[in-house]
Each structure stands twice: as structure tokens, then as C-alpha cells.
Amino acid sequence: MILNPSAPHDRIFAMRAKKKAHGHSTRFVRLQKNYCFACGKNNPNGMRLRFSYDEARDRFISRFHLGKRFTGPPGHCHGGIIATILDEAMGKVNKRHDVIAVTAEITVNYLKPVPLNQALRVESWEVKVDGREHINTAEILNQKGEVLARSRGLFIAIDAEKMFGKFVER
View 1 (tube, one colour):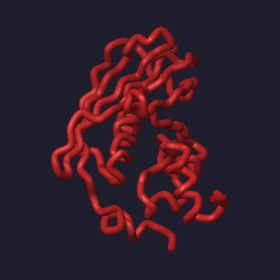
View 2: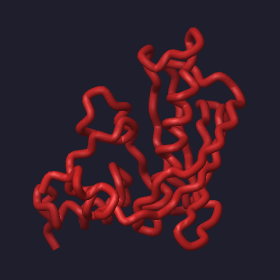
View 3: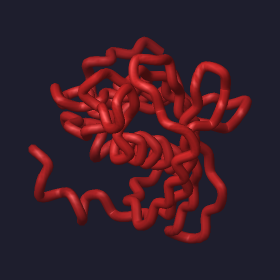
View 4: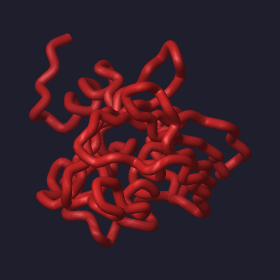
């Protein structure tokens, strides 16, 4: 089958075939412009994190560098940005169940300062699913594989059309 990535229907199948995790997971949201601060390619001020799914390890992974605009302590990332990255990574895990799930609770353990201008990665995976409740975890690691920050989050699956429909261009 030949896919036309510019056609909305084919774009969905092309994304599934590549096992990429860009934006959000449902057809409803995927067809809209994505202004998400963490992962949205249409947000000029956003982080534009791009995730891929590692089937062998059953994890979502994003590799990134943090520039000066994300400064907290001198030479290091602001804690709120660290929480944002971990939250986004954990949210991607819900794609495995093809649901949109909003963050209900997140716990972050800041283990070591997260440096700016260095190669970093975030990895996330599922811990447990119980009905609409999805519990996921994520870690930010440096080039040596040291865990710099770790999180655990509770996500609640929602009806995206009902919750966000009035904000979507038709």
C-alpha cells in the first residue's frame, strides 16, 4: 500500500507503521495542530520533544538537550521543566492503549541536578492499568546512564471529544 503522509487518514497509518510517538494518540487530536508545550511541533516556544517506542524494552524514549532558556540553578535545568519532561514522557505510555489520559497526580524525585547543554534522554514505561487509571513511571538520564530524576504518575483516561471538542477547529 502506498501512503500519502499529507492525507489525514494515511498519516495515521504512516505514524503507526513507524511506531513514532509524536503529539497525542487519538485520531481526534492527531489531526489538529499540536501546540503542546512539551511535544507540539506547532508551538514556536515549546520544547518539541520527539518520542520513539522501543519495542524490545517496552519503553518510550526521547533524546534532547536543554538550552539556557530552561535555566534554574546556574548551569542546570529548572525543576518545573524537569517535571514537565517526565510528565510528557509518562503520558506517551498511554498510547499503548490508544487512549488520551490526563495527569491526575505526579511525584518527582530530583536525584541529581540536570545539566544544561548536554545530551540527555528520558525513558518511560507502564507500571499498572486498572480500568481508567494508568500508572506510569519515567526517568531522565545523562550520557553515563545515571538517573538524574525519576517520576511516577497517575493518569485518568478521558473522552477527548467531550473534554476538548469545543477547542478543536472543525
